[in-house]
Image 1 (cartoon, rainbow, N blue to C red):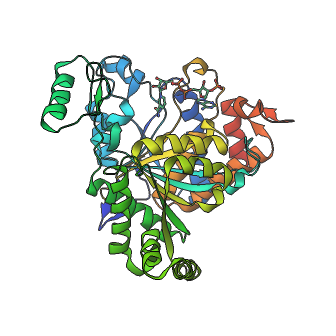
Image 2 (image 1 turned 180 degrees about the vertical axis):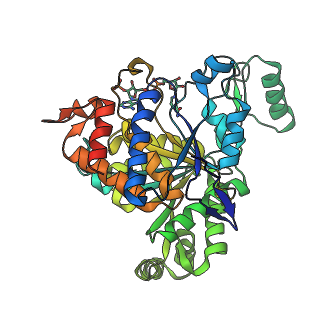
Length: 421
Ligand code: NAP
């Protein structure tokens, strides 16, 4: 079937009835997972639209499959397809090991300036969890995807570049606290106003659109004042400037304490929450990692920098069932470009064994359908998945943690989800 491109018009996605969606099936276990997931996607679309709408899947290559076919790990045509069709999905890719070789995932994010890594973390009934009340976790992580120490600006000790940077810092900038300057490698952590604002703005819009109670800025500003601390400061400033009456910030709360005392500030905070204002708050990253175990219900939307976001997403994923069902999306909300993806790797030792959990790609697909406005399709996928797990029909990773469960292969798990759609 001929399809057409999803477009962005006046800041909104325009989705045709037969959108072309490029996909990368992925390396290793990606092959089994994609085969299983795409059957579920097509079934969910069919059950809602009865043939009136349909995805036209377009395979594009990257990773080992691409390297074998063309000697290129990430061909220009693949990037061009994601650029043209706006929305795509991918399985896990092998990161080629070698000096100077960029991760393919990072390359795609950079090429399309996919500045938000969005990861929802919610609990599906029946999933084995290491904590007593995993259902209290219901968070949406907005992780900045282009800056921070992950920008890749690093210089290896012993290279002329590292020596030059160290010399500059010590002789021209008066830096005295590089503990072992003779042997130190150096990394740089850029955090900008624009980078912070575009991420925090989207986290706030997301929370307002869904009527969620809070956005929390998670940072290490107590130690890294001009990067992580500035992220918090710029985040609060943006919230107050652009969202005015719709939000109440802890920054405002702190100002009221200074002026009128704690009681007045607490009253203002309670009034704001009671009147449905979105509360913008902040927490230090290490404290947050404790509180997701002890008081997770206090958090809803999270906005954070790249490195914190990496740790936080995996810690939260573990609480609600682990890497086998952790979905992800990389999005540029202005251009509309988005790539939905498995957050785990290729798990090469299980490749082509029809064994692993396809949940991560399945849920990423559901997120993709939500993103393009096909919410009922996403709903079908979630309910089919939830019913299957509740019936204790699971792949090996859950099976080893559950009593009286039935062990299914990847393809059988897909069959079970389809029969529950
Ligand atoms: P990995 O592929 O994520 O596998 C680590 C372990 O996670 C597996 O041994 C398995 O644990 C569990 N696991 C992963 N996928 C699973 C699934 N679908 N269902 C159930 N369990 C699953 O990490 P890795 O072995 O460190 O990395 C392998 C390759 O993937 C590397 O080339 C790496 O660069 C790449 N990678 C790609 C991405 C991506 O494309 N987004 C992300 C991370 C890594 P058990 O054996 O304990 O059951």
